[in-house]
Image (cartoon, rainbow, N blue to C red; front, side):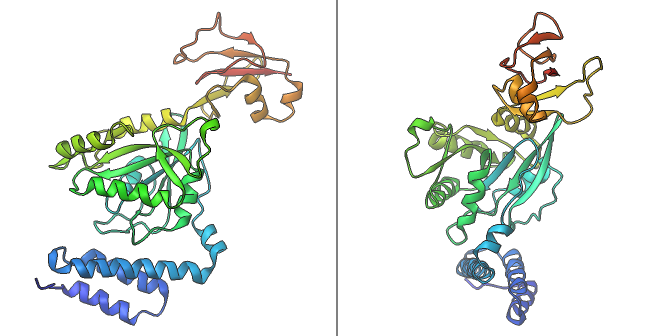
Length: 337
Protein backbone atom coordinates (compact mmCIF):
# COMPACT_ATOMS: atom_id res chain seq x y z
CA UNK A 1 0.00 0.00 0.00
CA UNK A 2 1.48 3.40 -0.98
CA UNK A 3 2.26 5.84 1.81
CA UNK A 4 0.57 8.85 0.14
CA UNK A 5 2.53 11.30 2.27
CA UNK A 6 0.96 14.74 2.60
CA UNK A 7 2.64 18.08 1.75
CA UNK A 8 2.64 18.88 5.51
CA UNK A 9 4.58 15.71 6.22
CA UNK A 10 7.07 16.33 3.40
CA UNK A 11 7.63 19.90 4.64
CA UNK A 12 8.32 18.64 8.17
CA UNK A 13 10.64 15.97 6.77
CA UNK A 14 12.61 18.66 4.94
CA UNK A 15 12.90 20.68 8.16
CA UNK A 16 14.26 17.57 9.86
CA UNK A 17 16.90 17.16 7.13
CA UNK A 18 17.87 20.84 7.36
CA UNK A 19 17.87 20.96 11.18
CA UNK A 20 21.16 21.67 12.89
CA UNK A 21 20.31 21.51 16.60
CA UNK A 22 18.93 18.52 18.49
CA UNK A 23 15.83 20.46 19.56
CA UNK A 24 15.04 21.38 15.95
CA UNK A 25 15.31 17.74 14.89
CA UNK A 26 13.07 16.59 17.72
CA UNK A 27 10.45 19.23 16.92
CA UNK A 28 10.45 18.26 13.23
CA UNK A 29 10.13 14.56 14.10
CA UNK A 30 7.26 15.32 16.46
CA UNK A 31 5.40 17.14 13.68
CA UNK A 32 6.10 14.29 11.25
CA UNK A 33 4.54 11.83 13.72
CA UNK A 34 1.55 14.14 14.10
CA UNK A 35 0.72 14.62 10.42
CA UNK A 36 1.75 11.28 8.91
CA UNK A 37 -1.27 9.42 7.43
CA UNK A 38 -2.27 6.58 9.75
CA UNK A 39 -2.79 3.44 7.67
CA UNK A 40 -1.09 0.10 6.99
CA UNK A 41 1.14 1.58 4.30
CA UNK A 42 2.88 3.88 6.81
CA UNK A 43 3.20 1.46 9.77
CA UNK A 44 6.89 0.77 9.08
CA UNK A 45 7.60 4.47 8.60
CA UNK A 46 5.76 5.35 11.83
CA UNK A 47 7.85 2.80 13.74
CA UNK A 48 11.02 4.24 12.20
CA UNK A 49 10.06 7.76 13.30
CA UNK A 50 9.51 6.56 16.86
CA UNK A 51 12.94 4.88 16.90
CA UNK A 52 14.63 8.04 15.60
CA UNK A 53 12.82 10.15 18.19
CA UNK A 54 13.86 7.85 21.04
CA UNK A 55 17.46 7.69 19.79
CA UNK A 56 17.77 11.49 19.58
CA UNK A 57 16.35 11.91 23.09
CA UNK A 58 18.88 9.41 24.43
CA UNK A 59 21.71 11.21 22.64
CA UNK A 60 20.56 14.48 24.19
CA UNK A 61 20.67 12.96 27.66
CA UNK A 62 24.18 11.61 27.12
CA UNK A 63 25.37 14.93 25.69
CA UNK A 64 24.15 16.96 28.66
CA UNK A 65 25.35 14.46 31.23
CA UNK A 66 23.49 12.39 33.78
CA UNK A 67 23.44 15.04 36.50
CA UNK A 68 21.93 17.70 34.24
CA UNK A 69 19.34 15.25 32.89
CA UNK A 70 18.45 14.16 36.42
CA UNK A 71 17.96 17.79 37.41
CA UNK A 72 15.96 18.50 34.26
CA UNK A 73 13.53 15.68 34.97
CA UNK A 74 13.10 16.32 38.70
CA UNK A 75 9.68 17.52 39.81
CA UNK A 76 9.69 19.68 42.94
CA UNK A 77 6.96 18.48 45.31
CA UNK A 78 4.23 21.00 46.05
CA UNK A 79 0.89 21.00 47.82
CA UNK A 80 -0.64 18.38 50.09
CA UNK A 81 0.60 15.41 48.06
CA UNK A 82 2.14 14.31 44.77
CA UNK A 83 0.38 11.93 42.36
CA UNK A 84 1.78 10.68 39.02
CA UNK A 85 -0.08 9.61 35.88
CA UNK A 86 1.50 6.71 33.95
CA UNK A 87 0.47 4.97 30.77
CA UNK A 88 1.15 3.90 27.20
CA UNK A 89 1.15 6.45 24.33
CA UNK A 90 -2.13 8.26 23.56
CA UNK A 91 -4.13 7.02 26.55
CA UNK A 92 -5.15 10.59 27.49
CA UNK A 93 -2.94 11.41 30.48
CA UNK A 94 -2.43 15.01 29.38
CA UNK A 95 -6.17 15.49 28.90
CA UNK A 96 -6.77 14.25 32.46
CA UNK A 97 -4.13 16.66 33.77
CA UNK A 98 -5.76 19.55 31.90
CA UNK A 99 -9.23 18.70 33.28
CA UNK A 100 -8.08 18.30 36.89
CA UNK A 101 -5.56 21.15 37.22
CA UNK A 102 -4.57 24.61 36.06
CA UNK A 103 -1.87 23.15 33.79
CA UNK A 104 -2.01 23.57 30.00
CA UNK A 105 -0.06 20.58 28.63
CA UNK A 106 0.40 20.02 24.92
CA UNK A 107 -2.25 17.55 23.80
CA UNK A 108 -2.01 15.66 20.50
CA UNK A 109 -3.37 12.55 18.85
CA UNK A 110 0.14 11.30 18.15
CA UNK A 111 2.51 9.37 20.44
CA UNK A 112 5.04 10.97 22.78
CA UNK A 113 3.44 14.41 22.85
CA UNK A 114 4.60 14.68 26.47
CA UNK A 115 8.41 14.59 26.52
CA UNK A 116 9.01 15.84 30.06
CA UNK A 117 7.11 15.52 33.36
CA UNK A 118 4.25 18.04 33.39
CA UNK A 119 3.06 19.07 36.88
CA UNK A 120 -0.18 20.85 37.70
CA UNK A 121 -2.02 21.72 40.91
CA UNK A 122 -5.48 20.23 41.51
CA UNK A 123 -7.67 22.26 43.87
CA UNK A 124 -9.61 20.10 46.32
CA UNK A 125 -11.76 21.91 48.87
CA UNK A 126 -9.22 23.85 50.98
CA UNK A 127 -5.95 22.30 49.68
CA UNK A 128 -3.94 21.83 46.48
CA UNK A 129 -2.68 18.43 45.28
CA UNK A 130 0.10 18.09 42.71
CA UNK A 131 -0.65 15.91 39.66
CA UNK A 132 2.30 14.96 37.41
CA UNK A 133 1.74 13.79 33.83
CA UNK A 134 4.61 11.50 32.87
CA UNK A 135 5.89 10.85 29.33
CA UNK A 136 4.41 7.77 27.67
CA UNK A 137 5.92 4.41 28.58
CA UNK A 138 6.70 2.23 25.56
CA UNK A 139 9.58 -0.08 24.51
CA UNK A 140 10.99 2.47 22.07
CA UNK A 141 11.08 5.31 24.60
CA UNK A 142 11.55 4.52 28.26
CA UNK A 143 14.27 6.02 30.47
CA UNK A 144 15.39 5.14 34.01
CA UNK A 145 14.71 8.66 35.31
CA UNK A 146 10.99 7.98 34.93
CA UNK A 147 11.21 5.37 37.68
CA UNK A 148 12.89 7.85 40.01
CA UNK A 149 9.90 10.20 39.84
CA UNK A 150 7.44 7.35 40.39
CA UNK A 151 9.35 6.25 43.51
CA UNK A 152 9.10 9.65 45.17
CA UNK A 153 5.36 10.10 44.50
CA UNK A 154 2.69 9.55 47.13
CA UNK A 155 0.42 7.70 44.73
CA UNK A 156 0.31 6.37 41.17
CA UNK A 157 -2.50 6.17 38.62
CA UNK A 158 -2.10 3.93 35.58
CA UNK A 159 -4.14 5.40 32.72
CA UNK A 160 -5.49 3.04 30.02
CA UNK A 161 -7.44 3.71 26.82
CA UNK A 162 -10.86 2.00 26.71
CA UNK A 163 -11.11 2.67 22.97
CA UNK A 164 -7.99 0.61 22.22
CA UNK A 165 -8.16 -3.00 21.11
CA UNK A 166 -4.63 -3.44 22.49
CA UNK A 167 -5.28 -2.15 26.01
CA UNK A 168 -4.32 -5.44 27.73
CA UNK A 169 -1.01 -5.60 25.88
CA UNK A 170 -0.39 -1.93 26.67
CA UNK A 171 -0.94 -2.51 30.38
CA UNK A 172 1.35 -5.54 30.36
CA UNK A 173 4.05 -3.58 28.52
CA UNK A 174 3.95 -0.73 31.04
CA UNK A 175 4.13 -3.13 33.99
CA UNK A 176 7.08 -5.04 32.50
CA UNK A 177 9.05 -1.91 31.56
CA UNK A 178 8.63 -0.55 35.09
CA UNK A 179 9.85 -3.89 36.48
CA UNK A 180 13.01 -3.40 34.41
CA UNK A 181 13.57 -0.32 36.62
CA UNK A 182 12.84 -2.43 39.73
CA UNK A 183 9.37 -0.94 40.18
CA UNK A 184 6.20 -2.94 40.73
CA UNK A 185 2.74 -1.40 40.62
CA UNK A 186 0.48 -2.90 43.30
CA UNK A 187 -2.98 -2.30 44.69
CA UNK A 188 -1.75 -2.09 48.30
CA UNK A 189 1.73 -1.74 49.74
CA UNK A 190 3.03 -4.84 51.56
CA UNK A 191 4.02 -4.56 55.25
CA UNK A 192 7.59 -3.32 55.66
CA UNK A 193 8.51 -6.62 57.28
CA UNK A 194 7.65 -8.38 54.00
CA UNK A 195 9.38 -5.94 51.64
CA UNK A 196 12.53 -8.01 51.13
CA UNK A 197 12.22 -7.96 47.34
CA UNK A 198 14.57 -5.92 45.16
CA UNK A 199 11.46 -4.33 43.62
CA UNK A 200 10.06 -1.06 44.96
CA UNK A 201 6.29 -1.38 45.30
CA UNK A 202 4.18 1.62 44.25
CA UNK A 203 0.52 1.79 45.26
CA UNK A 204 -1.56 2.12 42.10
CA UNK A 205 -5.09 2.20 40.74
CA UNK A 206 -6.19 2.10 37.10
CA UNK A 207 -7.94 5.01 35.40
CA UNK A 208 -9.93 3.58 32.50
CA UNK A 209 -10.05 6.67 30.26
CA UNK A 210 -12.20 7.40 27.18
CA UNK A 211 -15.27 5.86 28.79
CA UNK A 212 -17.30 7.80 26.21
CA UNK A 213 -15.91 5.74 23.29
CA UNK A 214 -17.95 3.15 21.38
CA UNK A 215 -15.98 0.12 22.58
CA UNK A 216 -15.60 1.35 26.16
CA UNK A 217 -18.21 -0.81 27.91
CA UNK A 218 -16.99 -4.05 26.36
CA UNK A 219 -13.32 -3.21 26.87
CA UNK A 220 -14.01 -2.23 30.50
CA UNK A 221 -15.41 -5.71 31.13
CA UNK A 222 -12.29 -7.25 29.59
CA UNK A 223 -10.04 -4.99 31.66
CA UNK A 224 -11.91 -5.89 34.86
CA UNK A 225 -11.69 -9.59 34.02
CA UNK A 226 -7.90 -9.54 33.63
CA UNK A 227 -6.87 -6.81 36.09
CA UNK A 228 -9.88 -6.26 38.37
CA UNK A 229 -8.52 -8.55 41.07
CA UNK A 230 -5.12 -6.86 40.89
CA UNK A 231 -6.10 -3.16 40.84
CA UNK A 232 -8.97 -0.85 41.67
CA UNK A 233 -10.42 0.43 38.37
CA UNK A 234 -12.22 3.76 37.86
CA UNK A 235 -13.75 4.59 34.44
CA UNK A 236 -13.46 8.27 33.43
CA UNK A 237 -13.98 10.47 30.40
CA UNK A 238 -12.27 13.79 29.78
CA UNK A 239 -14.80 14.46 27.00
CA UNK A 240 -18.05 13.98 28.94
CA UNK A 241 -16.52 14.62 32.37
CA UNK A 242 -17.89 11.33 33.70
CA UNK A 243 -15.97 10.03 36.69
CA UNK A 244 -13.78 13.13 37.10
CA UNK A 245 -15.40 14.31 40.34
CA UNK A 246 -15.15 10.77 41.73
CA UNK A 247 -11.49 10.82 40.68
CA UNK A 248 -10.84 14.03 42.64
CA UNK A 249 -12.40 12.47 45.72
CA UNK A 250 -10.44 9.24 45.25
CA UNK A 251 -7.13 11.07 44.88
CA UNK A 252 -7.71 12.84 48.19
CA UNK A 253 -8.83 9.66 49.95
CA UNK A 254 -5.83 7.66 48.76
CA UNK A 255 -3.39 10.26 50.08
CA UNK A 256 -4.67 9.35 53.58
CA UNK A 257 -4.18 12.84 55.01
CA UNK A 258 -5.98 15.10 57.48
CA UNK A 259 -6.36 18.89 57.45
CA UNK A 260 -6.00 20.76 60.73
CA UNK A 261 -6.55 24.44 61.55
CA UNK A 262 -5.08 26.23 64.55
CA UNK A 263 -6.42 29.14 66.58
CA UNK A 264 -4.99 31.66 69.00
CA UNK A 265 -6.42 31.40 72.57
CA UNK A 266 -9.33 33.76 73.00
CA UNK A 267 -9.78 34.38 69.26
CA UNK A 268 -11.85 32.78 66.52
CA UNK A 269 -10.03 30.43 64.10
CA UNK A 270 -9.06 31.78 60.69
CA UNK A 271 -10.51 29.25 58.25
CA UNK A 272 -9.72 31.29 55.13
CA UNK A 273 -6.08 30.24 54.89
CA UNK A 274 -4.50 26.89 54.08
CA UNK A 275 -4.72 24.25 56.82
CA UNK A 276 -1.83 22.18 58.13
CA UNK A 277 -1.71 18.83 56.32
CA UNK A 278 -0.65 15.71 58.25
CA UNK A 279 -0.85 11.97 57.74
CA UNK A 280 -3.90 10.22 59.17
CA UNK A 281 -3.22 9.05 62.71
CA UNK A 282 -1.18 12.12 63.61
CA UNK A 283 -1.39 13.44 67.17
CA UNK A 284 -1.47 16.85 68.86
CA UNK A 285 2.30 16.58 69.32
CA UNK A 286 2.81 15.88 65.60
CA UNK A 287 0.99 19.09 64.75
CA UNK A 288 2.93 21.01 67.39
CA UNK A 289 6.20 19.92 65.74
CA UNK A 290 4.87 21.11 62.38
CA UNK A 291 3.83 24.51 63.72
CA UNK A 292 7.12 25.18 65.54
CA UNK A 293 9.96 23.02 66.80
CA UNK A 294 9.88 24.60 70.25
CA UNK A 295 6.34 23.37 70.84
CA UNK A 296 7.62 19.80 71.09
CA UNK A 297 9.32 20.70 74.36
CA UNK A 298 7.00 23.39 75.72
CA UNK A 299 3.55 22.05 74.79
CA UNK A 300 1.47 21.15 77.87
CA UNK A 301 -1.97 20.49 76.45
CA UNK A 302 -4.34 21.52 73.66
CA UNK A 303 -8.01 22.26 73.14
CA UNK A 304 -9.89 20.73 70.23
CA UNK A 305 -12.97 21.76 68.27
CA UNK A 306 -14.33 19.08 65.92
CA UNK A 307 -15.54 19.82 62.42
CA UNK A 308 -19.01 18.88 61.23
CA UNK A 309 -17.45 16.16 59.05
CA UNK A 310 -15.64 14.51 61.96
CA UNK A 311 -16.93 11.05 62.85
CA UNK A 312 -15.68 11.45 66.42
CA UNK A 313 -17.83 13.55 68.74
CA UNK A 314 -16.04 15.22 71.63
CA UNK A 315 -17.89 15.72 74.90
CA UNK A 316 -17.88 19.43 74.10
CA UNK A 317 -16.15 21.91 71.78
CA UNK A 318 -12.92 23.28 73.20
CA UNK A 319 -12.28 20.07 75.14
CA UNK A 320 -8.83 19.82 76.73
CA UNK A 321 -6.76 16.91 75.32
CA UNK A 322 -3.35 15.37 75.93
CA UNK A 323 -0.29 15.66 73.69
CA UNK A 324 -0.92 12.11 72.44
CA UNK A 325 -4.53 12.82 71.42
CA UNK A 326 -5.20 11.56 67.88
CA UNK A 327 -6.49 14.22 65.48
CA UNK A 328 -9.17 13.92 62.80
CA UNK A 329 -9.70 15.68 59.48
CA UNK A 330 -11.10 19.18 60.00
CA UNK A 331 -10.18 19.55 63.67
CA UNK A 332 -9.39 23.00 65.02
CA UNK A 333 -6.59 23.04 67.57
CA UNK A 334 -5.59 25.56 70.21
CA UNK A 335 -2.06 24.88 71.51
CA UNK A 336 -1.02 25.75 75.07
CA UNK A 337 2.66 25.87 76.10
